[in-house]
Length: 78
Ligand code: SF4
Image (tube, rainbow, N blue to C red; front, side):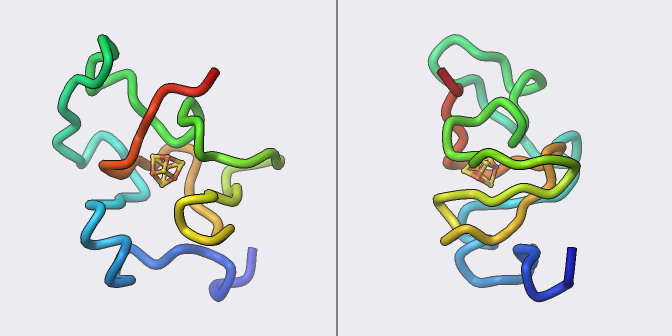
C-alpha cells in the first residue's frame, strides 16, 4: 500500500494508543481473558475486511494497520 494509506506509528493518536506494527514489541496486558501474547490486529474486532498484511482499522479512520500489529484499543473479534 501507499505510505499515506498506512497508519504511521508516529501519528499522535497512534502514539497515545501505543500502536505498533509488530505486536511482540508491545506490552500487552491480558484483556477479557485473552493473554497479551494472543492479541494482534488480525483478531481484533476493529480490523475491517481486506486482504494481505495491511488492512483498515475503524479506530484509526480506515488507515491501514499491520495484521501483526497491536494497540491498546484491542478487543477480541467475534
Ligand atoms: Fe489493531 Fe485493533 Fe488497535 Fe486497530 S484497534 S490498531 S485493529 S489492535
